Amino acid sequence: MKNSQIIVDADACPRSALAICRQLGEEYKVAVWTVASFEHRIDGPRHVVAGNDPEAVDIKIANMSSRGDIVVTQDWGLAALLLGRGVNCLSPGGRIYTNQKIDFLLEERNLKRAVRKSGTRTRGPRKRTAEDDRRFEKSLRRLLHQDKGTPPA
Image (tube, rainbow, N blue to C red; front, side):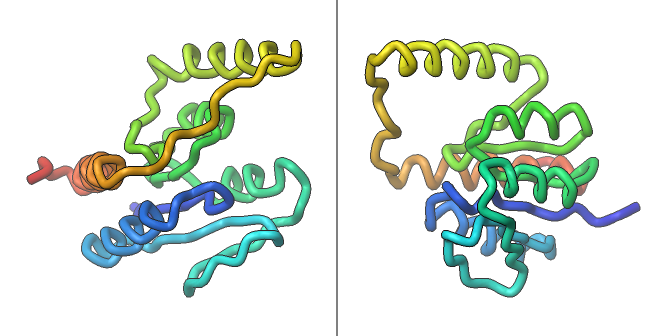
């Protein structure tokens, strides 16, 4: 059985969440990969640069990941694709994506896109807090324990 890995959609991942991924990857002895477009400079030993096409990073992550891996992404469409393949998906805010809720999220994305197309502005993301980091770490630990078959502490 293959060891799982953490793959981070690094184009939009906050630095604090990336640091947590690296810390827990070391603690759990799990490889942590970052994937980003040419326009983002990410330091680290396992970094993959994808092209500048709008979906290049998503395609690279989809090709790199397999059942049991953990992907950190804010992209609900990518999460939906990966969930169907048995990949665990987590937002940098700590939301564990599930098959039961992904359809609702995709519907919400489409509604917001329609609102923006009509000229109405939607709010951007709020400022990241220490609570976001704690929630993210707790969720990532939960997925890592799930992979190891042990209950989280």
